Image (cartoon, rainbow, N blue to C red; front, top):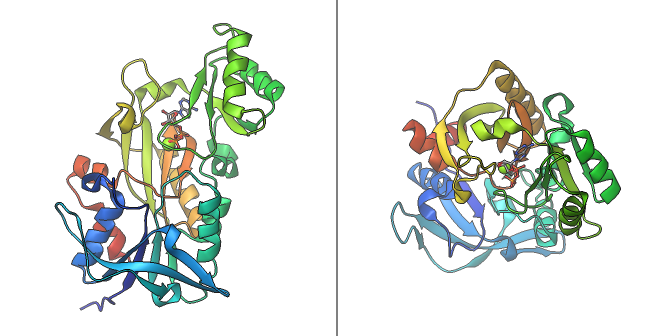
Length: 316
Ligand SMILES: Nc1ncnc2c1ncn2[C@@H]1O[C@H](COP(=O)(O)OP(=O)(O)O)[C@@H](O)[C@H]1O
Ligand SMILES: [Mg+2]
């Protein structure tokens, strides 16, 4: 029989009040870890601290439950050395801000064999939007800039119009579309760009991919492999696919090109210490690499009648 080691696991999450536990990817991971007999601890990035160069966190042992109240804490919050854990799952949601950056710096002080998912250096380096630029063969025309003339020139070069994205957001929040310049006045376009860049904040402008109306694929990557995929379909005549904004979900296959793309990205991400990631693909193009706290695993399970988190824990 295969010997499976019992592990001590820390999950760093947003404060858990307000979670939709029923559909939460991290909660699924915690439940399965507990079923396998691992010790599960809960903490928030605010509880991270350094004493000299030694990293600690305020943590609480927790028993994740399948039904409300979803968490039963076993004992009070205690300060523990991060090096005591076998694994630390950094699962804080964006926005990626100064506090997030500092949390990754503290995690980078861990000197033991502790596996941090995803690697803190990669969480610093791999901005979820800009990361696609590492894969020039797989992306649609894209620029990043805060300069209005540059953004307007790019918009004029794209006959389908462009999509504009803030660089630290998620779930379609703050995203705008500029229709082709024959359909939109320069005044309205300039006002949109001014608002989004607030004068000096760089944003991403990308060719508008009309295939988005057929759906955006989410490919789940784990440890260099494709764990599964689903499709997010926007409401009729809309282009935002997020389920929180009315998008619906369906099973999906992947084309040969999409598989090749996903595996190439996955290999590179694994080499950077990004073990768990979610790719967004539109019309066969890579549009986002979610690394901070990829979600939708619960929805993937529901669509396929499987428990994909088991495959994650099987790999340890
Ligand atoms: N190039 C594009 N063409 C058309 N729609 C897009 C494009 N890129 C993104 N979108 C739409 O905008 C949404 C948000 O973009 P995305 O880059 O995935 O950022 P996030 O999911 O972090 O908000 C997508 O879910 C999709 O609906
Ligand atoms: Mg996305």
